[in-house]
Structure formats: structure tokens, C-alpha cells
Image (tube, rainbow, N blue to C red; front, side):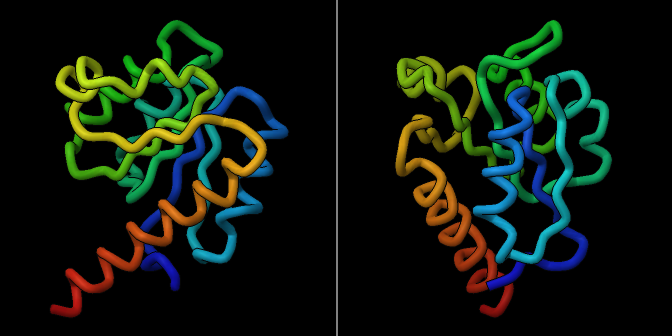
Length: 132
């Protein structure tokens, strides 16, 4: 299943190896990837209107992943965000209430295939919604 041509995926990750691993796992969606190592660069490029953002917590730059998420929500609350981080304590009710809905996947061995399944579910849901 493919994303529409105009839809892109932002990968906001300061580890360049992880960026490539994420992109490799998601390449079957046929989306254009945009890579950012800071939250500031991600926010500055939201005009590209990504459909999906894969977002790390610890980033280079002045703001972290949750602060970046907050800015994404201000820009467009409908953007699908997956917080992809080793800080599992970020996935709590307080953060969900403060920053809005987001999915969380802890980085570990099988995380990349799980990330692909999350994105697949999002793409299939959007396809069903559009075709209904």
C-alpha cells in the first residue's frame, strides 16, 4: 500500500544510521522522505505538509522531541506522529494530555518492523476513509 504522491514522511532523528534504517524499513510505502536532525528544522519545513512524522526525543538543537511535537500539533493536529525513542517513560497519560495524541514505539531490536506495522495501519485507515 502506498501513500499518495503528495504525502511525505518526515524522519526527525539525529542519528544518521537510524535515519537510514527507518527509511529502509518504510521505503515500500513509496513516499518521499525528508530527513531532519533537529526539531527546529522539522518545524521550519512543516509547510511541506507531511502525512507522517517519525520523531525521536533526544535531538540535536535547542528543542527536544516533545517540544517539536507540540509545535507540530499547533501547525496541524491531524499529522500522524510516532514518537520513536528509547525513553519509554515518555508514553504516559500526562504527555498525551499535554501534547495530544501520538503513538509511541520504544527503540529496540524489533522496533523497526513494528514501526512499519504502525505506518501500514495508518495508510490502510486513510485509504479506507478516502474510499468510503
